[in-house]
Length: 226
Ligand code: ADP
Ligand code: MG
Image (cartoon, rainbow, N blue to C red; front, side, top):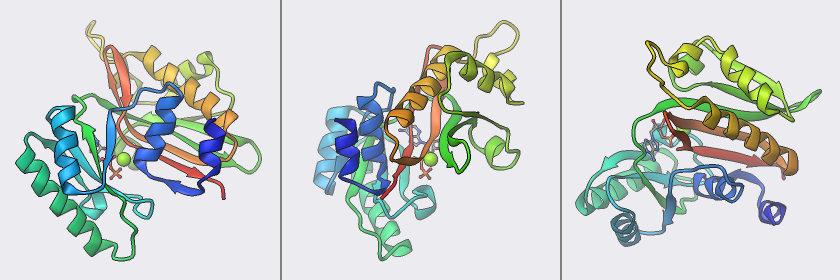
């Protein structure tokens, strides 16, 4: 069924589409719904409960923040109303050619430690998973680890321990910071997901928020082979 859904599309799936696939696969994602217009965005956010996040939804826009396309911590209908206008007009200005589906409305995830899980295809090894801490640690320090798919639970445990930033996840002075098993589970599930859906060419969960008692995917991008 999943392959069916994927086979209809090729190229970059939007965040909403990517999260829907991940959710069907049992991977924890933050509640996310597409709004085609402002009125819908307001009514979805009321139903979801504040605070919410609004993001531009377009398969032509890869970096949503760079396009002024992300507004966090909106706490009432008036803020959602304003954010919708700002996001769509700023995206239109920056990417006049982009086909915009609308705006996604998401629950604002509580603050966590940001990690990333990625998959790319190597010409020799096939699908390879990557794990790292989010933000500057990945962008500047390239503090990441890799394993060839299939990734087992013990591989996933090693991947997490290998990064230099591991102490950030492990906690200190007896304080348990994040659930390592929750991260291992996501890595293994992503490995199974890409193994069984071979047309997935690239995948980026950036970021995943990690907590003491779990983890949740906050942004997702999947590229499907045409
Ligand atoms: P981009 O396309 O620019 O990568 P993201 O969806 O990753 O956009 O959003 C940018 C940042 O906003 C994330 O790195 C994260 O820190 C924060 N963020 C995004 N979505 C949420 C959310 N639902 N709840 C809380 N924070 C979020
Ligand atoms: Mg992101």
